[in-house]
Length: 183
Image (cartoon, rainbow, N blue to C red):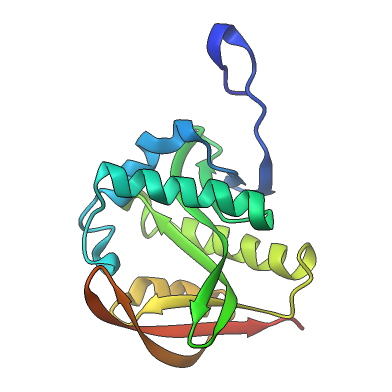
């Protein structure tokens, strides 16, 4: 268990656990680990580049408020072997055309790409959405140029449903929505 000031144990709210990972709510102390992802130009290519410190803080604050509002958000993905935060994966409500949809989102440090962590975490989030939140469908919204994320969605049992152009950081970005319905 992580140690806080003066050796007091810090309680973690673990949400999910897989063979190699566990997912927990992010906390303010995760800022530096989050910067390793959100300030990496290559990791953030689908977002038109890296975020600055202020944008990373807003991203983190948005997750903390999502936990309060919905009881879920993007969670810290912790590698059990090292206890390192290697990414983020979770559920968020996202605008899609004229509605809001429940999305599985994922973003990892480049050092941990192509090792199956994204699909491992995304599948756990899909199961959580169906079994705990009792929703009938869940989606992943992916920029059309993000081939790796599309592969994760397909491996997570999703199929392409439709497309839409989102406007973000001053750029029109075509996105594809992948979805799966609970059986």
